[in-house]
Length: 199
Image (cartoon, rainbow, N blue to C red):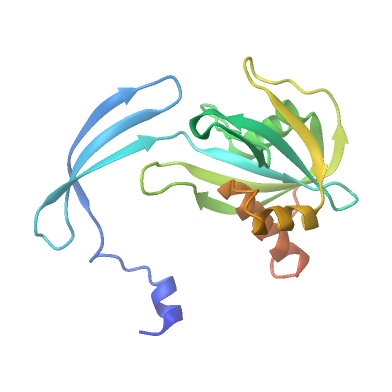
């Protein structure tokens, strides 16, 4: 099979696991944990799968008129580090991804945008979470007041694409979703992706 055929194949019958039993392990304010028993695709038995159920999220790549992008520095408790990231947040019940993107950008950074473009989806941690992050680009930015959630602390600044590239190469920018945002930004700059801007 050719490499391209392998990469884009959609028929996955020989790989699919079928759930035969599912139970809730933990129910939290934000996340739920489940443990499932699945039939293995070769028919040879079963296996346990533990995973986090996540409501979904968006990430925004806010592009300033001078080409720099708006980034955040935020402490991430599970890894005990401050990370540099694009603005992002989880979907609220009944909220569309575009509405979430607008809300998160405004609340976390204070910026509002006149132009929005959906780039695509990413599975953040498919081995143990259902989370899907929808990637949006924003331009025509104007700065206003931030409205952080209670208990949310972060710093906001503008960063050049060249600096982001250097931080990735040096291992100092490790946030996966932000690396994906940088990849989409490169595709746009080289003309491989044309944003379908919405107003």
